[in-house]
Amino acid sequence: MTPPAGVTPGALPDRADVVVVGGGAVGTSIAFHLAEAGVDVVLVDRGDLGGGSTCKAAGGVRAQFSDPVNVQLGLRSLAAFEDFPRRPGQAIDLHQPGYLLLVTDPDDVPVFTQAVALQNRLGVPSRLLDRGEAAALAPGVVTSDVLVAAYHARDGYCSPESVVLGYATGARRLGATVLPHVAVTGIETSDGAVRAVRTSAGRVTTAAVVCAAGAWSAGVAGLAGTGLPVVPLRRQILVTEALAPAAQALLPATMPMTIDVSSTFYLHREGPGVLFGMSWRGEQPGEHLAYSDDWLPDLAEAMDRRCPSLADVGIAARWAGLYEVTPDHNGLVGESREVSRFLYATGFSGHGFLQAPAVGEVVRDLYLRRTPAVDVTPLSADRFRTGAGHRPEHAVV
Image 1 (cartoon, helix red, strand yellow):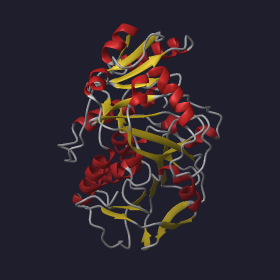
Image 2 (tube, rainbow, N blue to C red; image 1 turned 90 degrees about the vertical axis):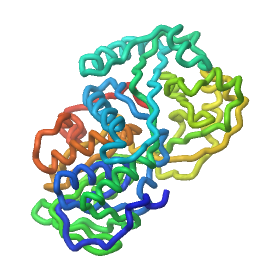
Image 3 (tube, rainbow, N blue to C red; image 1 turned 180 degrees about the vertical axis):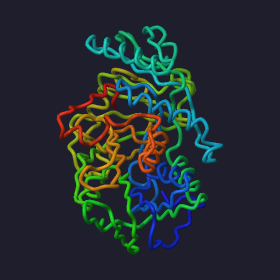
């Protein structure tokens, strides 16, 4: 992805109130919300804006989670995506056919039943469907073994590139400095506080840094003398050629983003074709950026079981991207205890894009020392050091 139109790289200033490291959906959202609040913010990314993980994402947006913090972040973000053409002012090709989660393991039935009840209490009108109702929504998907399905009609998907473009352009319009192709080479601290950021374009005096570097966040945190338990893990996606008329009837444009909970195989319509993928259990952590065919046997098995009609459709595109994974597959949002004003928003384990609008609001408020609309205290990185325990999220792909 090239730098978004309207976000012309400029000179690195000598000072800023805040330096945001990372130009994906999360980082640009944070920069936009800070700039909107009148904060003097600089955003830097070592590559193209959105070029790390955001523009490799499937683009799903949803409020269906089992952790209450994730539900709230997802719901607030859905509202922001719906309002995106007005604020910050960018078309994002938002489709809202819903998310349909197919449950086939008896042990998962109470988990998703409880999750739907939680979502309802928090204002998400999700509901449980039987296999016949699920089949009506996704007629090309095998549902004969489905015990129950979870569905929320407002969920959907949109264009990650356009979201980055909107936030980056909006941030710059509000006075932020947005600089792609500027790498952070050091973070200066003294007396337990941030003092400056060194980059490939020069040095910026600042009293605050926000790490939104996704899969590369552990390295950024290390520059500040602190740690973040984030590791990169490859995920891969395929997009088919245009569907024939018979296949379009089975997999209509109105079908939800459909996920087989047991295998994590997922699919949704993408223009004239279908986008699909899954979490491959054989993948090993590491910065593996190239596409690999190693996952295809497991993918084919899951596809044949859940959507065999896809086996006869040619592949038009394929790519690999990186998840930023934490030990419990929940994000990290907060401020370092070791380094004052080193804030972080990372480790979302596949949920960063869809939670980016709300996370931008939250980090703005944390920086301004205001109470955020969503209490993200449970997402502090300290939970892995203080015995607070993991926060398992069951709706993970």
